[in-house]
Length: 109
Length: 206
Image (tube, rainbow over all chains, first blue to last red; front, side, top):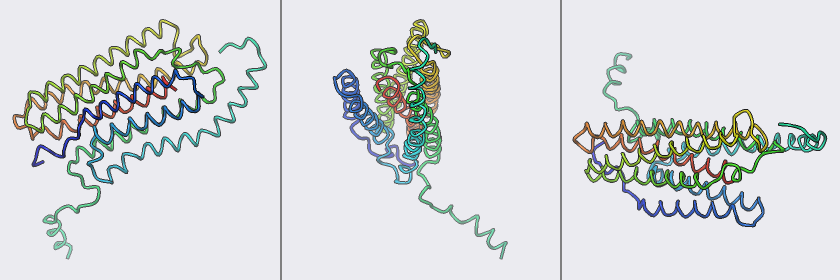
């Protein structure tokens, strides 16, 4: 470590405002009269966007090597893969619970 | 030949690979965070699976309420800004300001944990327990406490980590000597913020 300024510092306040505005939009969109799928998709896109801003600028991933970037996105790939692995299972059980729900009237959980 | 190779070896510089970093500590923290991210990823993915397979999952933002959590989200984003500012001041050689901003970051984290404690006790009082709740599937409460609890533990550890880093900076008169340590602390802290962004979206808003 020779120099203190390891890399240049981006305009952090810009990132802060982007994160703040995205958070406000996220909260507002929940109460909008739109289909649940549209709202859900928008929320996921905004969450990933915010996470990317934090990783790229606050965690300086933008100024690191490509290899470190590849390491950093691995968990996202694994988590996404896991969602798709669980998806067919979820659909199968959902079908069962729907029919089961109809049978006993006063079922307690 | 073997002795030749052995004597040569000592003089040879370690081979540069694409992975050879400017700081091993930084790479170490990244590898830890990647593992931790898989942990949170699995928790959130299994939360989604449980929710998808449940016929009576409560509507999270109606049960949990998002006013307080929105404030907590904002607080964590602010603490991330004070963290990067601490590093920026240190790079300019101002150790006093760096420590002040690190302290502000730790305070933000401590308030976050305090608010979470308040939120938990309020929800427990309303009947949200690991074993069940008045609104639907018992897994709702169990997964809520596990995921937010796991994250809360990370914030608590982060506050302790930040205080240790303040000490580290205090003990080193040369700002350059602690730059790496503060940057690595920042990586951990921003990761905790990043995870909360995900938890807030997937467990409160969706």
